[in-house]
Image 1: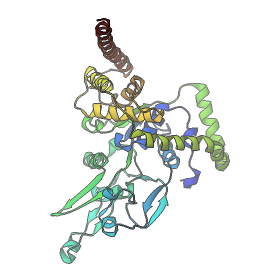
Image 2: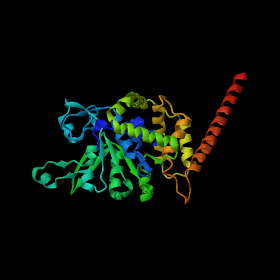
Image 3: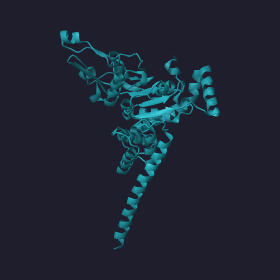
Image 4: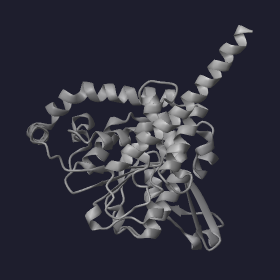
Length: 361
């Protein structure tokens, strides 16, 4: 394991544009709900997760808090910080990648309550688990398809609510657990249940690179990095720093991004045409399209943002037919967009026509 400052730079990862974009979008807006990266071994999945943490700016935390609470977020403080507020001691901390081992038990993940202590002393004693460490960090779950289903459920619940709720024998404890969830899996080792798949915000399929030029570039960069990590990292520092600034700008802009009714209709229509169950896809697509707009420095969602969001949000939510490739799906999205926009344009045209007509009178 390299030292943290020896982490391969995010910007230096060759290709895998969709994976990098999905990770960046979740970094800008963790409410998208994480990303599932499906791909064979050795496709830079874990490199990318660690590199993402290194890319994100340091943030303010409450000094000495096990959850690393955000001192500015008075509503989201843990029970301890709530008691000590206001006037909490503040320090800066880097983003971390917290890994969840496949063998993790439920207690290890959610933490445990000391019931005896609660009964004897009348106060709660909480032993933090992995979700506590993950708050405001990146939670990396390798081979998520090999985890116990119940644990995946617990993880996804916490990711969706930004809270972890523990109850044992009538004693309950709740603490903040808002993290960027990155799950990876190798589809050759079995799939995730569709109910669980649907709960990952985005999903990307990555393939090995079959183009000789690109493969050579992968080897070349890796070799330069291994020979002299420090100067390799230095060489990429400007690009990394530009990308870091872009993330911060996008985070600030995101709250101002508008999604017009026309774009909402387009999103709903695509989800209907693609026969996606439930409404999670529509909502995630809206959040993703808004985040893409912010990343591009725009304060309103455009059709191309919706198109890009569809590629990241719908692939794992389609009702599967045997032997169906993902290729035709993108064509269907295009068709759906053309129809929607055709209808929209026709309506707008009719509106202009009546408008012009009324002016002549």
